[in-house]
Image (cartoon, helix red, strand yellow):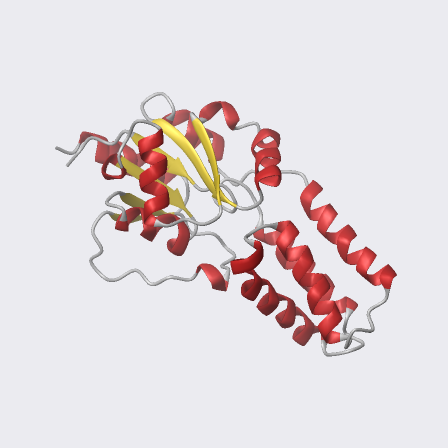
Length: 235
């Protein structure tokens, strides 16, 4: 087994809160249009529109805002008024401007790893928004590289590892999404460590086959340190 050289991290809901802002916006959307359909139905409608539009718009708040506007038009049969569209745009702007709230043990984990490993941040989403979040988090100095990608596939991880002088086979990817963070890195020949988060997005659901090699699961980010050290000393 190769010595571990790179430890990569997902950002949203691995290092800082993200889904809580989308959940709050979805519920607010439901209440806004409860005069047309039940609030729960309106909330479900925006969630379905968002998932459907990912292939066209990608991930992130801007995509979500467009999906809110589209859903509003659909739910009202095209009768939604301009001030309501303005409120939806304002909701999206507030989501872009929210403060960064780090999850527990983030900085301690990065401090424990950055002297022994090359750390990378690999995240999906809108480039400008993700760059702002990285800077606002105060964590940028721990990472040798920050990669904002449209999607996470095995080839994505292979290319990124090569870009930083490494290989997937000697890389550990940590994140809260089995579908985006963990399994693609394992399929690329690397290691994946699942860090559960309290909110799960249906779009990111994935099943891990029993006995999957190079797969780890920890209770929180502190466990990533133990996994990385174990892999780096295994011959």
